[in-house]
Each structure stands twice: as structure tokens, then as C-alpha cells.
Image (cartoon, rainbow, N blue to C red; front, side):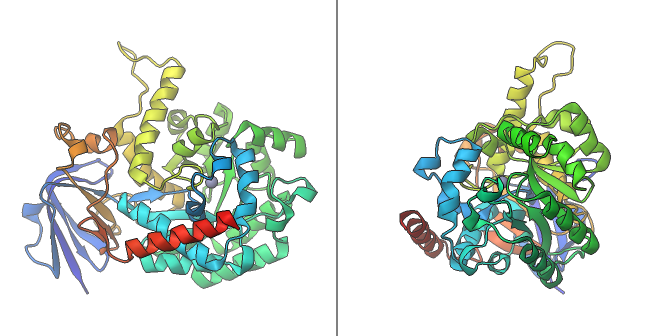
Length: 461
Ligand SMILES: [Zn+2]
């Protein structure tokens, strides 16, 4: 039994059902779960460890619902800097094909370190190529050392160029091995209990890199074990043309054909979806990982997030892979979400003044997507808000940052409107991953050096 008392936070943002923001707030945590929450005066006076958060804002840990950790090795590759999705992929596939197990481990820790420093406590990652003897296990074990919760997607590609797919044949796997490995990973690592640190997700990569058969069989296997399903969907116009030409359906209709609709499914992007498709998501419980930076970087388009929310779609945020972002800063992603939704509203003629309710996303709405939204998308009832019985996952930011100066009349909004800052503390299940601005579980200079060496080797091979 161990306890942690967190007290005197200038503001505690609970994200509970009443969206309480508690002045001079705190938490009493026992064995990784929140036992009490409220004003400091009402909390116990002692604990095994005490964290004083005077002059800090305290928030629920951010949840990243879409990433490709390994892509931190291929940020800003010159030939892929100014390409759209399909050309970007074709440039990068051969470089990714050179990765070894140690590259997966190093890049996992780099991405998780960046995420932790930006307030993230749970990340979903989508790894879909396993060259040179690498496995999803390399990522999972590396993540265990860091201490963030991981939803590890067993990605896959089976439709190579010779069969009409986009990736070269050298990076695709045969479907029997994919399914066998998926089953092994679920049986080895998947933990569905409250407070789970590791869950497995089955995630064929995209309509243009796997067969319909693999989609169907992955869905059947996932449902047999009660694990979730994830893929890229409706990201670009190119993908829509591909689906119409190859399958005779638009991407969402194709998902219906292969039994990929339901509350256990979430899609990355969904930029190119119409009202009917959004209503289908809302009705059936399909979730969306909105990745605004990546969508801007690759000129994919603007996902209609405000309309999704109107139809009751579960929406979380994702930084997406670091070759299309090129960072893993969750607070920055929250800011981009708010700004891009506003641009979209403006482009569609939303009223910016007067009587009509302006359809502008607020800072708190954007923050809600990164917390409650992400938890809903990943199917985690134990995450997403600070409430009694939930996991003690939170982060705290110092309020005396230069970039926040002048905005402290509303520190919650300042955290999103102003330039993104780093977390001073990031805590997962009552354990520190970031303390006084430093990574507790990783040797940062050594990691950066190893990472740069690995990236150099991949690019110069
Ligand atoms: Zn992606």
C-alpha cells in the first residue's frame, strides 16, 4: 500500500461530469487510484509522499489515440518533406524496411519521452511493419521501462505492389503469420482490467495496404478476445479513389462490408466523411482519432470535428507518426485542434458575431477531446478524468512560464491558447514519469544520442 497526496494546485481541472475546476485543489491517491479529490483543506494531511503544486495547474493525463513511434527516426526526411500521403509513403517505405529491433526500442522511448513531457499518460501506437526480425514485443517492453500506459496496435500490411497495393512487396507479411502473431500478442500481453498498463489492438494498416479478407479475419479474432480494432480511414481523396476503384465502395461503406463498424473500432483521421457517415459513426459507436497536424502537414484536408461531435461521435486526438507531424507534443495537438476547427468553421461561414451561436471550438472543448474523448475512443472507463476510483494519471504545469504571462486570469484556456509548454510533473498510476521537468525513467542525453545514430544509419544505408 502506498499513498501520494497532491495538494495546493492553483487550479485542478477534473474533467468530471460537471467539469469541475477546483481552486487550491488536490488528490489523495492510494495504490495508483484516486481515493479523494477536492479542495486541499478537505484532504488528508499526510501520506507516504506529498507533492505541493502551489503555482501549478493540474489536469487529467492526456491520451494520445494515434501514433507511429518508429517514425521519430524519419522526421523531416528531405524527399518526404513536401509530399502528399501516397508519395510520402512511397518515399519512406524503403527506409523503414531497414529498421531493426533496437530501432523499434529506441524510437518507442523517444516518442514516449516527448509525450510524457507534454502531459500525455496513455498512448496508442500503430506499428505495422516488422522488418529484420522486429516484433511488437520490442515496443511493448521498451514502453514498460518508460511507464506510460500503452495500447499497442499489432498493425499489418499484406497487399503489396504486385497485388495492386501501395507498399513494396518487401514490407508486407503473409496473412496467416499476421493472424497467428496477433493471437500470440493478445494472449501474452492484453490486460483488460482497470488500471491496465498494456492492451493489444488489431490494426491492419489501411484499405490500400491489406486485403478485405485480412480485415474480416482480424475483426473476427479481435471480437473473439474482446480487443479493439483500429485502422487509417478516409484520410485522403487518393484513398477514396483507390477504394472506389478497387472495391467499388467509399472507405466507410467498405468498412461496413468487412464488419469494421462498432463500438470496438476507431479510425485514424476520417477527414473525408459526409454527414451520413458521421451519423453512422455516432449511431454505432465508432471512434475517431483526429490528427490535425498530420492532416495539415500532408495537405490531406480538414476533418469536420465539430459536426462529428454534433452526431455523438467519440473523438480523441492523435499526434500521428513523427514523419508527418514531426513531433509528439500533445498540448500542441490540442491547440492545433482548436485552431483548425475554427478555421473550418470560418471557411464554412460560421457566424462569428451576433445572435447565432458561433460554432467555434473552445479551449476546454479541445482539452476534453484529449482527455475524456481519448478515453472513450480507447474504451477506457478508468481514464480521462480525475474522479474517485479512476486511475491517478495526471500532469501539472508551472504557471510562471514566460509564454503564459498575462493569461493567468484563465489558466486553463491559457494552456491551450498560448504557445505549448512542457509538463513539470507527469504521473501515471501514482508513479512519477516526469518530476521537476525531468524524465525519471530515461537517460535523456543518452537516448538522444542513440536515436540520432539510429536515424543516421537508416537514412544513409
Ligand atoms: Zn497514422
